[in-house]
Image (cartoon, rainbow, N blue to C red):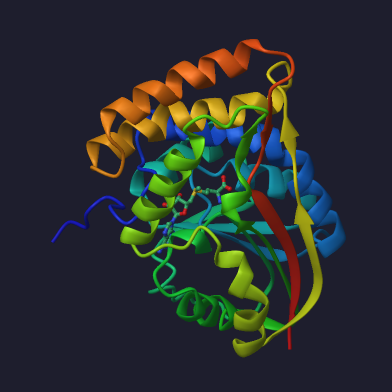
Length: 273
Ligand SMILES: C[S@@+](CC[C@H](N)C(=O)[O-])C[C@H]1O[C@@H](n2cnc3c(N)ncnc32)[C@H](O)[C@@H]1O
C-alpha cells in the first residue's frame, strides 16, 4: 500500500511551505553554522540530518563539514526528499544520501554515526523520547548530537501594539498540540536526552528581534501568510480574528517603531555516552 504523504506535519508539505522553509533557512543559517562549529562537525564525520525537510540544512551541513564528510538526510516527506534528491543530482552533492522514514521507525543499517543535527522537528512528534531513543541507537559512543528546537514559543510577540497576535499564538499552540506536537518541546529535552543515553554539554537560548526593515521580518511575515489561513481552515481561528490580524500586521510592517520578538530557540549540544 502506498504511504500517505506526511500528514503528521502540521505545517504541510505544500510548495509554499517548501519555499518558506528555504527563506527560514537563509535567515537562520548563521546560527546553524555557529552550532555546527561548536559541535565540531567536519573531517571524515558521518552525520545524520534528522527531519531534514527539503534538505536546505543537509546541503549547508555538507558544505560546512567538507568533502570527506557524509550526510544522511532523513525525513518522512517524499516530496521534500524528492526536492533534495533533485538538488543532489543537479548540483553534485554526492556526499549526501537521503533516507525516507519517520523518526519513530528509524532503522538504518549503520549504527555508528559520528554526529547528528536536528532543527525544528521534535516539536512536531508525539513521543520525543521514543524518537531520541531511535536517534541514540544510531550513534556511536562519543558522537555529538546538535539540536535547535523552540523552548518558549509563547515568547513570540509583536510590540508596541500586540493587537490580536496573542489570540493567533494561542490558536497555533492548540492546532500544533492537537496533532500531537509540542511547540515548547525544548523545555523537556535536556532531561529526555539524559534518559536516552546522552550527556548534555551545551545549552543556550537564542532570542531574536525583527524590525520591519530587517531581513528577519520575512520570517514571521511568510509564516503568518501561509499558516494563519490554515488555522482558519482547520477551525482553530475565526475568520474575523484572522482578518483583524492581517490588518494589524500590515500596519505594524509599515511602522519603524514596531518589532517582532521571535519565539525563543534553544541550542543544545549533547554527547552520546
Ligand atoms: C519545520 S520542518 C524543518 C526542516 C529542517 N530541519 C529545517 O530546519 O529546515 C520539519 C520537518 O520535520 C519532518 N517531520 C515531522 N515529523 C516527523 C517524523 N515523525 N519523522 C520524520 N520527519 C518528521 C517534516 O516532514 C518536516 O520536513
